[in-house]
Image 1 (cartoon, protein in one colour):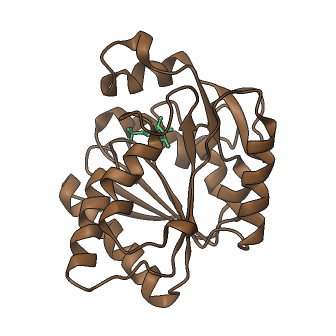
Image 2 (tube, rainbow, N blue to C red):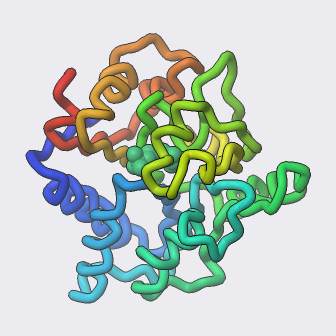
Image 3 (spheres, rainbow, N blue to C red):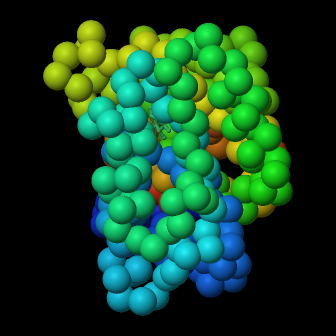
Length: 241
Ligand code: GLP
């Protein structure tokens, strides 16, 4: 893995934006796997700025988001769909027919799962997958456990994840307890991976991603098997390395 340590969140976001800009210049119709959460907010702002300056063009891009809560509805301000539209899609020239978001009203809706995997296959997989990392080492919502799944699936969120994400909601009770997530296959089959981590709450997860045995107890450790991973960290996230 290529490890890039930047001395601030702003620098980290700029560095990551530069990598996405380079990807879009190399391949105008890149398939981008996109992530949500607090970490990439600065990156999306930086990409919008670069788009406004004419440095990057998303007209031919195709995007697949990693995950979504179940039960919030796409118009809910904490849904990942709302996040993507308000923080990125509405501000750039992306074609809305090329935006794919995993969405399901309920965990009984198995058609939504299969459809997402078919859509991923039809575009030929992901060129660049953007990832964050959970404090417990999850990627997307692939939570630590005794096994991981390859395909898009429903997941019961761990207590640690619910607690970590409670900061975005009024109370912990409001955090959805279930989600839909892309599985490990499209992530690990992405032609390149760009993982961002910021802050000392991520330092242990970053260290384990790099140094622990590859195990479903630490989903991000599977990135050790991938031949093109860039980790873009701020100094706090890198402090245990
Ligand atoms: C969230 C999301 C992930 C995200 C990770 C880190 O729960 N499911 O896609 O990458 O956890 O989130 P944050 O950047 O807010 O710390």
